[in-house]
Image (cartoon, rainbow, N blue to C red; front, side):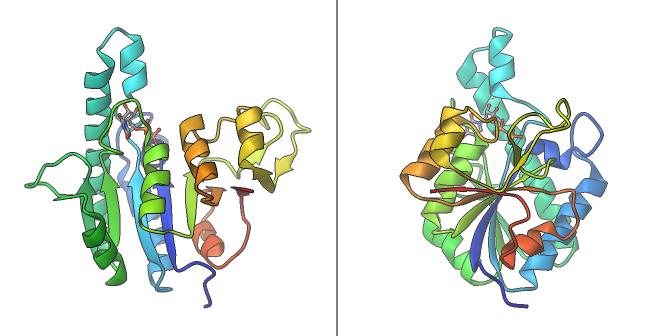
Amino acid sequence: MATRFKRILLKLSGEALMGDQGFGICPNMLSYVAEEVRSIIELDVQLAIVVGGGNIFRGVAAGSFGMERTSADHMGMLATVLNSLALQDALEKKGIQTRVQTAISMHEVAEPYILRRALRHLEKGRVVIFAAGSGNPYFTTDTAAVLRAKEIHAEILLKATKVNGLYDSDPERNADARFIKTISYMEVLERQLKVMDMTAISLAMDNQLPLMVFNLKEKGNIQKVVCGENVGTTIGG
Ligand code: UDP
């Protein structure tokens, strides 16, 4: 099967690993994600993944309850490491070679983030999971995903979500909500559409990184995207 993209970055929110549990990591969901990943690795696509941590801990939420924000964000970044290790395990169980690289050093657990080493892994067909976000507080894993995508020269950032993409209003409240197939970065910023945080969208805009928001729960979607089908909303321009 011919693919449109050779190197992509997949952003998975922590919630994507939570399934219907409400907290933590759902083994069935991990296995599902790993199977979806396998379907594109078999097509020789080079894949890097950034995982969030919102299923375990979010710095901004803890900060609003009075915790020092930097400490809270450190905890959030550690939560992404938990998710990354769980994902690595699930991928390896499916026979997919994987490396975790962390933006905060923890040598006994994972490799440190080293761009050239990450590129070498990708060239060898290993999935590289970037953990601990950007390593800096006050950022999100969406922003880290845009940053890493640019660093590794990914052709597109795929943002996996629970919904099909962007709508012009909330489809759960408004039956007439219209699906948006393509939209510009600027419009997302101006309308403050809650698909990614503004920092992430701005960074993607300034550096011309195409984004696609798609529904992870539809089986086969990642493969369709990689083969050039627009199954979600494309953000660019
Ligand atoms: N975080 C951070 N710096 C980063 C990335 C993440 O401080 O570069 C922290 C932040 O506290 C955030 C948490 O890690 O709330 C989990 O990441 P995020 O909320 O982006 O996860 P997601 O919503 O994708 O599950």
